Length: 276
Image 1 (cartoon, rainbow, N blue to C red):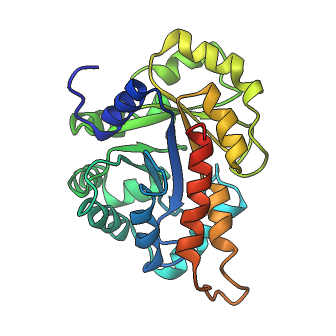
Image 2 (cartoon, rainbow, N blue to C red):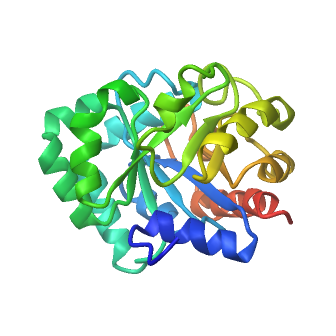
Image 3 (cartoon, rainbow, N blue to C red):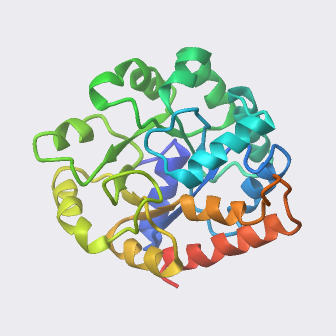
């Protein structure tokens, strides 16, 4: 890979050269509130994050389980908006211009914001790529092509139900990395099982040289270590959201020590992902 420009491409190239796997934590923007979220975001690289996935809250997140749905609701109550999400990225870039940031969200808020305006603002803020679960490859040209012209990547999802006929469509024009969904269903619904993904990963490797990151159902350092042996990266989301939720009581009050505890939790999982 010659002279990579996009941070995501550069990071995967550097990890491959070092023989390391990518650890990709997920955090819902604005959760648990607008003051604590940027503290968590800023601490993720030191906690072992090679790439950061930020969730853009949406009222009907079809691929997300209870933990992330709850985080979305709380973020909306806190006042999260698309401009504020981009502000978080902009603030992060003041001290970290190297860690890639991937925004994961649904297409409706992007479309409502204005696709070109969103892409321009995301580029200026320091975003590197997007995951849009409800925008299938057959329909993503209106977003993917202008994104590509701005050196912004659209990451495609491959699932256990992606068969031989559909896989080439998913892989065509994919950039950055491939998000391999470990289970059939929503996030946090079941535990990832690396052995069940061997065939799928093998089929992907035959048709693409893009890095593969596995997500959905990775909850412990041990699972992250096992998954990391099968792929190029490990994505952890619901487990982190649950850890944040453990510091919030039934009245919505946030306990002291949340940031330190969550970042310590992330550090432990990152060690597993990195083979430690």
